[in-house]
Amino acid sequence: MAGEVVSKQSIFSTLIVTWVAVLSFAIFLGAGSARAESSSANYTFLVGAGFLCDSGDSATCPAVVKSADGASYDMSGAGTLSTQSKSVTAAGTFTHKSTDGKALETGVWIASELVSFDSYGIAPGALLRGGQAFGPSQFGPMHSRMFPGSMPAGGRAVFRIRLLPVWGLSKTATLEVNCAIGKVPPEHQVEGIRLAFEVGGLEFNEEVSGHTLFLLTRPGATAAAKAPAPEAETNSAPNEIQR
Image (cartoon, rainbow, N blue to C red; front, side):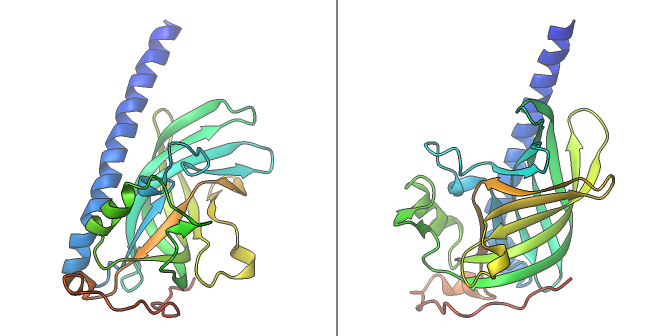
């Protein structure tokens, strides 16, 4: 009986993860058309997912954060945010692990609110870190086709999210996503995520691993991408959302 329960949970978990992976990828692919329709959806972002991942380097994906007692959350996802309408559309997966690495729960997370966003500016060379490209080399051309006119950018976003485990009650929390490229403040030099639960006050604030990235497209950039792109202005940045 126990084996049957575990088996059903494993199958259900796999289905949930697959569904969210498809949803996240749909958000990821649909960002370009959304930007074409509305100038307010000016950022796409990745959290330990997509072309940021490298099968030969487990530190790239998922994004991992720990609490003071050593428990952790593994999180991946994708979405879009607007600094003008102060909105977000994003989803992903999570796994909560105990201090000894055992999976306690797994499920999906969905963003419900953009609390704040601080831009660090665009960084044309961001896809090259330490002289090497982010993720597998084959994702370079794919990035160009999927996001014509987009520019890698740094920043710190705070979202209110709902975590929906395969079993059990949902939880609400704030998810902080920090991409440490561009003009990064001294207090936010570490790339990664942080998680703080609204009920119980549990905080996971030790960034362990995982890549994050924001992609900026300015209004009209999708149309302009059909023509040769001018040299990027590395010091320019859009308006920021403050708390």
